[in-house]
Amino acid sequence: MSYKDQKVIGIGTVSELTGLSLRQIRYYEERKLIFPARTEGGTRKYSFSDVEKLIDIANKMEDGLQTSEIKKIEKRIKDRKVRDQMIRGQLNAAFRIRK
Amino acid sequence: MSYKDQKVIGIGTVSELTGLSLRQIRYYEERKLIFPARTEGGTRKYSFSDVEKLIDIANKMEDGLQTSEIKKIEKRIKDRKVRDQMIRGQLNAAFRIRK
DNA sequence: CGTGTAAGGAATTCTGACACG
DNA sequence: CGTGTAAGGAATTCTGACACG
Image 1 (tube, each protein chain N blue to C red):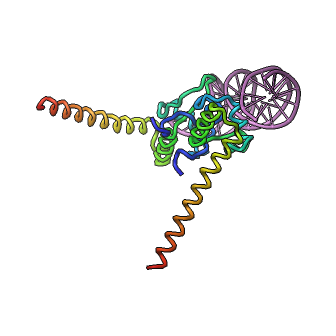
Image 2: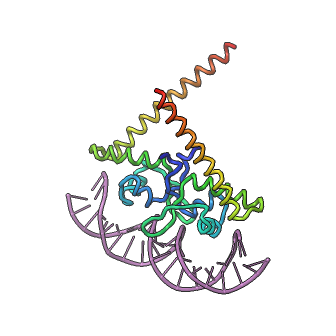
Image 3: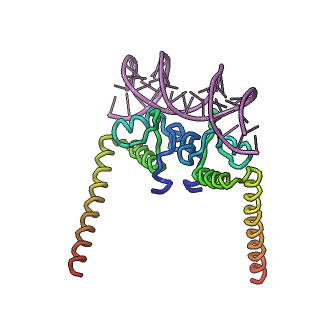
């Protein structure tokens, strides 16, 4: 969509932007917390959204959370979003029927 | 300021985003049309603004303009902006005096 | 579990130059 | 003038593994 979601940033730059080591960034990917794109050659590309997410992860790690717990938290947030979206869809459908 | 002006994109990605060759992108820099940042190691980093500017340059080149002409056009636009900014400053000053 | 590190290799980028037109 | 390309080298990134705790 916007600039924010374009996967164009290399891992070195992400490291500078987040303060995380290359090792940490790759590890969080291994734990399925982050999903960079790949170039043909196989190098990772991140978006600004990814960078923000990594900063959020870094904060949670500092609070002593484990990657598995962070993943659960994110899943919960996502599920809430999906549920709200469903409700909104139902409401819209109901209103269309009345017309 | 915003994401748009952060120098975080490598030249390869810029090439994909703009359709320009690495040679062209570097040449427009040589002609002072674009000003990427550099990492410690010396690799170029561009912003989304730079990408937009390059697309604009590419369009003008297609129209048969030379880099020197494009540079002049941009200078004119910039001068106008500076002038308008000055006028605005003068107006603000005048109003402050009346108070 | 999360992260550092050395290892070897591959992908990416850099500069200066020659070529063509 | 603007761009392609081959050349040699340097910077960047990749993966899998060992280490520590």
